[in-house]
Structures are given as structure tokens and as C-alpha cells.
Image 1 (cartoon, rainbow, N blue to C red):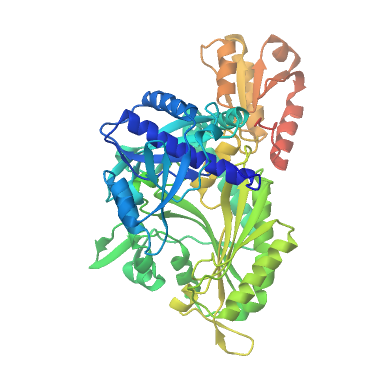
Image 2 (cartoon, rainbow, N blue to C red):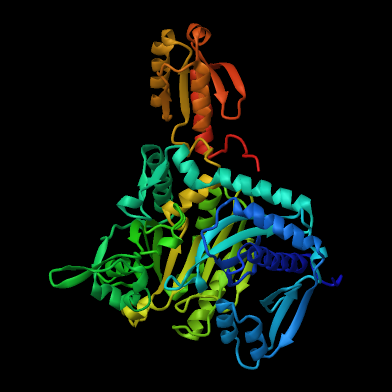
Length: 587
């Protein structure tokens, strides 16, 4: 392999080549299998198959052994340019390959790759031979279902995911990372910590918030509302359904209908559950004539919306059908635009920092080929976004032509505790809806003009943000977010009364506290509190009652004795006030 190839390119070639090795190994196991596509992806590779039977988890071991034998044979990856007719003969028994062949544009070179007796229709590139693949540096990870070409009307195929590296050490590190991802999975933590549940039988993609999860959600929402009022926003509440006229005017029925719930017929009219809040905020704007003196209007709403996501796309809290949008709309004059964008970005960063996210990157998406709105508006809005990002000193990338057809935007992406990137905040201009709804304000010169409309989400949605937050902290929320900040554990029944007295004092001090009055042994009670990731556990025994103080066990196991009740309340209250993390989570 050429020295000029970058490590990233080399790794991609290794993974693509490993996908071909896996396809050959599967055909050895199932000679009548139909093979589809097998690309390298960000963290590995996959291949899709139509198999004569359902694949079992233990089959991955057999396929792995077959792959190792193929690698040991030092097979050359030979690239061959062929005519369409010859390619069709070579893959005549593979229907998906024939369909892919038909899709290759006329005039484009058709290439096959051989590794011994195995032939695949493929553009490449690949490594020179299997000797460049390390049999100890790959692992098959999982089995999934996938529709051919991602279309639910097509055949369901079996997808095998794997990962590969150039050396065993990198593989070990990646597998450790996957273990951490599994431990942090918000669906697992949601169940273990009794935060929320999903009930397929009652409606897929809909979240049921348990008391503990609802407590955290309430804390997030209360903080969100308080900060919005501090930053000059007003709250609005809007309906959950609207007549078809509203969605026809907004354009949703034209370009978004497949993602909307079916209509409900009432009063000889069709009503739709809202997929977005923006048309409702526009109706409020239109309720009275606006002067430039009335702008900016900053209206925020935690509005629950409903989107009919495909069943295969649903994923815990990260992809749901009903969610509460952390939403706001700003209606501003052109003169106010720059200052408003700067302030919105500052507010977004403040909120993200408050929840413990420090590694933040901005992405600015600019005008696409097809768009609405005057070019000068696009230019002014894009400059306002860039000015705000640069003023905050953020690292950013420009996504040329990547904006929505109705306006440029900023997306803020954070990295969590284990380095995964999540897109949260969005600041989006909209030149479409003001035109569709004929929004106006009377300017200083007495002339009616269009306001600029800005969509703005700080957290994205409460459900998804909660899922990201849960995985970021691995369920060990900092004290200000913890559903239960303190668990009191009396050593025996003799100390129940003193425990109740302490509980009362802590509650009056504003802390969220409970006492474990169960018959479990003290060690089990302490383990239960640790498993529920309670920040502070108070051990109450004879010494504590006699001296009138506390023995405090911190979440990571550190214990401090003889702490005065007032001092403990002050300590926790300060942690909450400063939104301080109790201790850093290990990567």
C-alpha cells in the first residue's frame, strides 16, 4: 500500500476489504445467499444479505472463523474493469448486484473485485491482499434488519455489523468504548433508575415519565423558563391540533404530510396534530397589528408536538413520535437582527454550559441551490450568524449550500463525556413562513414591511435532551439535577425517629430527600442508594443521634463523619446553586 495514503484512508480501505471478506465467509456458510451492499462506515463496516434462514448470534462465531481462514490465505484483491455484459455474467446469480449494475450511469466504468473465487461488483478501493488485514484486529458486533435500499416496501435483509482496525490495541480500545456506550444507554438507565418507560402496546414512540424522571424534567423545565424570562422572552401556550388550513398555508401538508399523524374529522373539517409550533406562534403575531416599537417579539413555548416517525427509526427518547419542543420564535426588524442573533447564541451557550457541556462546535449552513427569499436577506442573515459565532470565539465549519430552502442556520453540537457528538441548539432563519402568512410590521417610515423570523431551539426537545444528558452523566446527575439528592439510612429501627427529624430539616432546607425505612440490612440499603446514583447517603446511628450530626457517604464512596446538619445543607445548597458536578464521571 502506498505511503502517500493517509491513516484515515488506509483504515477505510481495511474496513471495506473486511466487508468483502465477510461476504465471502457468509457465502461459504450459505452458498445460496444473496449479497447486497457492504460499505465501510464511520466505525467499521457492514454487509446486507438475503439468507435462507434467520441468522443467530452464535453464527457470528462461525463467520468469524471463516474470515480468519480467508485472511490467512493471502488472497489478492484484484480490480478488473469489465463491460456491462461481462459484469452481468459474473454476477448473474446475484439479483441485488444485477439491480446495482443497472443503476450505474451509462459511460461510467464498471469494475469488479476478485479475492480468489469470490467476485463482487464494487468501485473499491481495497487493500492489495488479505495479508494487509489483521485477523486479531476485527470483530463482528451485531445482527440487524435492513430494507433493501432503505425502502420499507422492499425485501427485508439481514445486516451484519463489524469493526476493524490496523492493530489489536485500537480494537481493544474501541471495544472498551462500546462497553461504556452500552453502560450509558439511556434506555437501560431509564429502566434501572426508574425514570421513564415506553409501552409498545399502548403506542410506540411515546414516553411515560415516572415520578423520578418527571422530577428531573421539571427541574430542567423550571430552569429553562426562569432563564427565558431573565433573557426577555415571554411564554405562550398553543393548541395541540389545528385545521388543515393552517398546515396548507404553512406548507406542511405539501412537504411534510408523510411525517404527520392522519387527520381527525370534526365539524366537517380536517384537524391535524401539530408537528411544529411555528404556525401557532404566527397566529399570535397576527392577532394584532405590529409596529417597529413592538419588536422584537420573543415568544417561547415548551410545546408538545407529534410526528409519525417510521417504526424502524424509533429509538428510546432519541427518536419518538410525541415530544416537547424546546421552542422559541423571534420576530425582529432588519436593524435588530445582528444584536438578536448575538444574544441568542450567547443564551444558547449559557444554557449548554449550565448543563455541563463545554466542548461545543458550531456549523453554519448557507444558501442551497433552491431557496426562497431575496438574495440580500440571505446574505445579511448569513453574515449575522457568522458575526455571532466569531464574537463568541467558537470553532465553526461552513456547510456551503447546506441550509434549508427557507433560510441559513447555526447548529451547535456538543461532545459528551465519552466524546460522542450530539446536535442540540439550532438558530434558523425563515424567509418562507412570513411570506406565506403575509406577516408585516409598520416601520419608522410608516411603510408595512416583512419582519425577519427566527426559529430557535436551545435544547432541541426535552425528551432527546434528557436522553443525551442521561448518557452524558451515565445516570449520575449532578446534585442540582438529581431526582433524589439525599438518601437517609438508619442503622436500625432505634434511629428511625432521629432519621425522620433529619429528613424534615433537610426538606425545610430545600433538599430532595427520602429515608429508607425498609427491613433490609444496612449494607444492602447503602448499595441500593449507590445503584440509584443518589449523590449523598446519610448513615444514621447512635453516634450521629448522640452528637446531633451526620455521617455522609458521597456517591463515589468517600465518607465524612461528624458533619453538622446546617453545614451539610449549606454544602449541598451551594453545589445546587452553582450547578456543580459532585465528581467527574470516568471515561
